[in-house]
Image 1 (cartoon, rainbow, N blue to C red):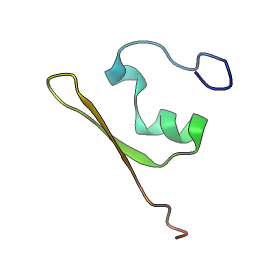
Image 2: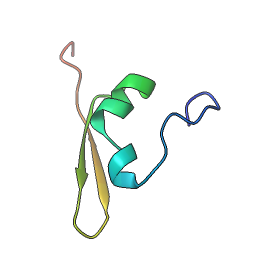
Image 3: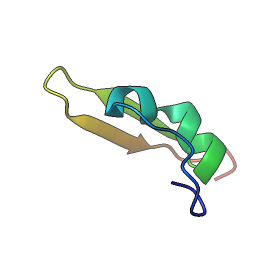
Length: 49
């Protein structure tokens, strides 16, 4: 969801992606998907800091 609109649907692996977070939320992050289904999102510092 972004501003009340569904921007992606599906499994966590297909939806929770670095590109999606950057495009819709302006967040720079790495996303890791573990074999057990756990999703780890690691925010990245912007290069301007």
